Length: 227
Ligand SMILES: [Fe+2]
Image 1 (cartoon, rainbow, N blue to C red):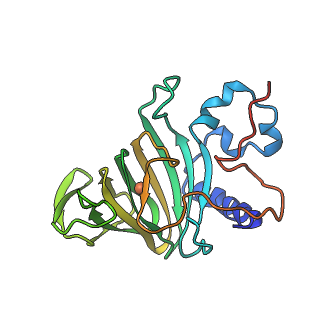
Image 2 (cartoon, protein in one colour):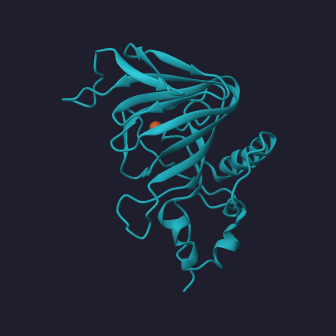
């Protein structure tokens, strides 16, 4: 992705979060110049990949396959310095924009429609013997505390205010219909470096072409702590 595109989508995201009165923590506004002054007191942000995260999943076509995320809080699978056992993200899904089919080895997450259009989620369970494949049997899924049985490949629609629980090994692909959608995530600890099993998408983080300076670092780009 071009840096100018990333800057544009982050600027648009700030406006969309404001419109929905979803307020971000202070580090959302820190610039690259601000980051050069930050020491080890900010290690949690660097180590646990808090902050801006925007990806086309290697598709080269962000409008069709992509997602903008901001990780508000997160713990760590491996670093005992961080006892937090939960994570929270806020995301923007554009109309018709897909997050490709994937599951998480460890993470259980609630995906919440917090406003805008409808969020449509297609679901499968991974086959227990070969997790590159879908299991063929109906399975249970819970939306806002209510359990139901769905067929493999069935879609569930979430209107604003509704949410769904995605357990580990449950394949999910989602997109928005009827307008740009504000999507929350409340989950167990999240590690996008190791815990995502994409069915076909080539990557989780984008390759970036630097055609202008960044407004904000993405969560994978923070400079080392000032000594
Ligand atoms: Fe997911």
